[in-house]
Image (cartoon, rainbow over all chains, first blue to last red; front, side, top):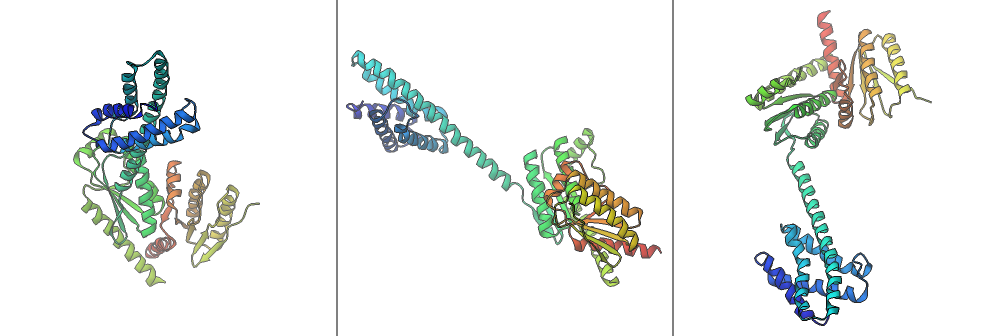
Length: 272
Length: 125
């Protein structure tokens, strides 16, 4: 394998570049695969065939880097794995002119390539999962802003589907904002929520009750006609929770409540 | 050895500020002491400040509701103030909504609520 290095590497690169021709530059492939090739040759020379052994550390590191790059650039698992498996194709071609000893060597190398290929797909998947989970987290953060609408009134405009994880974040953010701003009123606007089922309604109710426990009033606004019908059809009871059709109505209600509280405070002060 | 929580008197109102994590016996003691003090000072309002409490379990949650009911029998309004978001979430998950207990964001608002009550009472009289 060392002797026919250039030849083999060239064959390898050719097969890989035929598959990925349009998406990775030839020079880049050249560099990547040459590095990998020398690492494999070196590992073969110094250690056994166990790809988990220490001699293969560098090969593994290179493969991880390769699959990571491929995952980031949006290649499919097959396109990533081909980089490794194509090594076999190059070897096969050499087989035609080889001796019986070469066949045995080819089989050994073939097993080795399989192991390395598995490893590549493995690390490709891991990277993909990392990317997905970090994106999901970012989305969660982005999608739940808490805004101050007035002195003592905060609002949470909800957009998109509500699930348990998201409602948990909304709940925590809303309650924390109540404490931070000292607001006694909160408006949850669900204009942007496409559908309300029993689970979503349950979450909303919990948030309202939690806010009430902390001494703040929660108003649910932005209930579209269609959603109002669904809620009634599902038999969900909102009880004594204030619900309004529009954010404007909710704000008016909140401000009226606030002015009452202010006059109360004024009266209390004059008494004291 | 459970501790006894100090009960402070401010005019017609009693103030209990909880600075430690509550155990069951402490809350039971509080219930006893508070009932006694409400009668002794003929208090019209009770404020329980739980700003510092990080953990409120279902027993303590129920006891807060019980204390409120007892105080109401003795003609005193109870306001629980300063509940933390995490505590509120826990109580809701436990299915406790503390019905009949008034709540406020902070001590100032709690006093305002009691003042409102005093004013309403004065208007009735």
